Amino acid sequence: MNKTLAFPGRILFDHLPKTAGTATATWLTSVLGTGCVSPQVNGLHRKLISQYGGTYSVISAHMDFDMGDMLDPRYTYVTCLRDPIDRAVSWLYYVLDEYKNQQDTKLYQSVSRLLESDGQELDNDLIPNISNLYVNHFSRIGATDNTENRLSVAHCLKVLAQYDLIGLQEDMLAFIYEFGKLIGSPPTSEVARHRVTPARPSLSKIKKGLKKRLIELNQLDLQLYKTVASWQRVVIPPQLTLPQWQKYERQSGNRLLTTPDLIISKAELQDGAVIEYGQVMTFTVDFFLSRDITGLGMGIHIFDDEKRWAFGTNNILLKQIHENVETGSYSARYYLIADLPTGRYTAGFSFTERLAEGINELAWSDVACEFHVRRLIEQQFAGYAYLPTELSLLPTHDADDARIIAAPQGSIFTTDSIPAMQCNQTMTVEVVIANCGKQHWVGDVYRPVNIAFRWAQNGNTILEGERSALPHGGIRAGQTATTSMLINAPALPGHYALTLTLVQETIGWFDVMSNDFKPTVIHIIVEPNNAGAQTSSEPD
Image (cartoon, rainbow, N blue to C red; front, side):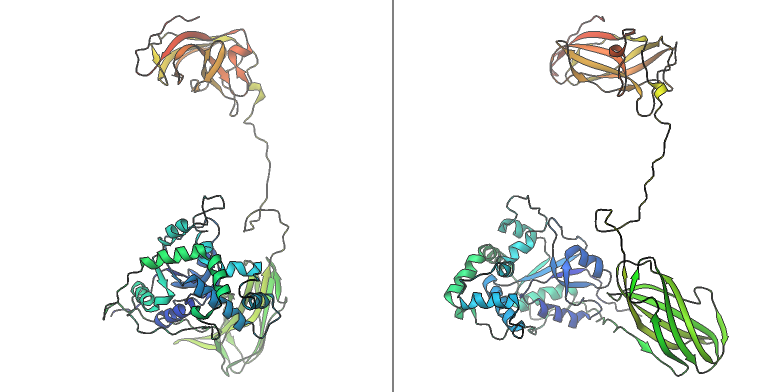
């Protein structure tokens, strides 16, 4: 048996205002169903993915991008553009029609002044809607405020090149044909128009002053649109066979079932409609049983404001079985801790009867109570999420002042003859270290004792090289150890003095802290890498 599946893709339809987005979304829903295509939603790109990505195959949205946001590689991106001047005119007259019964609104008045003045009186609140909408929208993707030429056509074209499909409102059939190929739908010969602005004039009939003003406001969008329009090379074949996904309709919410066997008189949340995070909630359902029930099941289910199932359980899962419940009236109590994110929720209840042949539903309600969870906290954090936090401070014994070397006594020397060195050369030499004092040379976690060296030129230290570790356990008082150390030559050629010594980090160099510690100083000529370097020499 072949199983037909609903469309499994991941598509983000970036629906810009007045670019036939509603008509496209309506067509998508008619093909794939309400269970695959989201209703028209608004919000930030990433938040929309988080909210709706797990519920719908296609997210249709008026979306905004945070500065620097990137397209999600898991999704196919689709958008549609329209001649910028035509789009702006459509938006202006749409506002007039939409707010004709609310003519006192600021937006309506701003649009009226612009149209009546033939483009001369332009309020600032209109500019985002009628000036370079496309460039302002797409320029935020992959850019920051400091990005050079962020508001440029070139940057937006690079962004649009990442979109999988870009349609033109002026050629909707070609756009829908290409969109159909993405979702496996046969081509259509007609796309129904939606939310058409009835009173708007055509471009050829708008006043010259208004048209001139709109052209001035949309110079970048006009360049962008011209280039994108040149990309379109769609040829629709007379017939096209594509796989057909099963249309998947979203189940209507708020399921309600009643039977004469169990009659509910009241269902309520006793604690009110506003719940504090972590509070104990008490739900009460009063009901009457008109006959004996051999095994009564009672459940509760909580949905968030996006109709997603947040929580559900019942007395069977909780192993609280109610056997042989007699006819009569009862009050069921549900005690829950509101460990829920801030937001709005609904609670519903179910009652069933367990029979030998299966489960018999007695009553069901998806939405019986509504409530809002809030979290009252002082703003003691940064970011968008609150995580309960506690800090502690505990003393440790990792820093031991008794291990600080106060007056080192001893010496370090090498029995190796250091050959000619070249710039940046690294070599290993054997050294003998004698601890003639009364302290153990090891240090602690934060102030270890290491073998070290310095390069000096004309009496000035110009390089502290890499450290080498002492033998495991350090060097005890009265002990002599033979080990090795790394030496790195300076980057520039010249005459240098190389000092071999020990150091306790953050405390000091042994040869500087005490005259009783004898370092080894060797005079070396460091040659360029391509020359045969020669050295000399003689330890001091």
